[in-house]
Length: 305
Image (cartoon, one colour):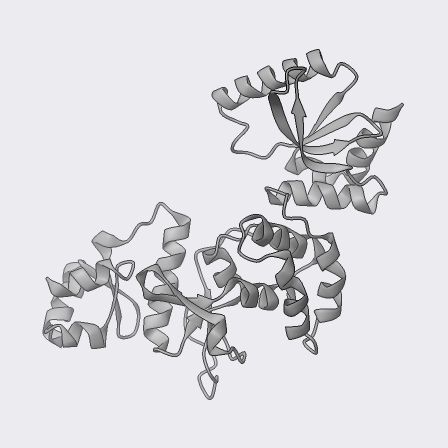
C-alpha cells in the first residue's frame, strides 16, 4: 500500500490529506481504524500501528512530534524542550511521553491542542531545519536560546555543556546567541551562566558535580585529564583532576561504568594509576551525592590533608 510506504518515512504517521491523495477513501480509513491496524493520535492524523516503535523513548518522541506537525500544518515545527530532546541535548528530565512543544506562526483562537503545547515565538526561516523523516525543528542555537530562558542554572549549564560537547554549537557561536536573546525575560541570568559552560563535560552528572565544586571554591584544575605511564602510553582519561590536591574525581552514573567489562577496565586503570602515580587519590561521585553537596566538597577538600 502506497500510504504505508509514505508513513514508513514519517515515523509511522500519515495525514488525511496524504492518505486521500494516495487514493484512500474515508471508508477505507474507517475500516483500518475499526480493525485496529491504524490509530488516530490527532484529528485527521493517523498512525500505522505496526510501525510505531514503543520501546525506544527517542523514537516515540519523534513519532509524537511528527504527529503534531501533521496536525498543525506545514508552518509548524518542534521547538523548546522537544527540540532540545530531539537534538539529543542532555540535562533535561526524560520526556514524560505526553505533550510535545510546537511552534506555530500565531495562536489566534486556537489556544490548546490535546497533547501539544503551542508557542507563537517569532522564529526566522534560517533558524528552522528539517531532519530525517521530514521532521521540522528549530536549529540547535535557536533551541538553546529558547530553552535556557526557562530552566534553572544547573540545567542550563548541562544543556550548554552537552551542546558544546556534541558540536551542536561552538564557542564562537555564544556571543551571537547572547545578542539574539537580549530583551527576552531571563536573558540576564543566561548571560551569567555561559562562562560556566565547558564542552569537555561528557554527562550532566559531570556538569553538576563541577558546579558544586566551583560554587564551593574548589574548581577542578582540569577536565578529561590524560594520564600516561613512564613509556608515554595512555593509562586513562579521568573526569576531574585537582593538581594541587593530587586528586582524581570520577562521576559514576548508571551506564558505561556499570557493566562487568567496564568495571574490569576501571580496576585495571586504577591499578596502573597507583603504580605510576602512587601519591594520587581517586574519589567517585554519583547522582545520590548531589543531594549532599557538603559531602562532595568535604571529600575533595580532605584529599589535601
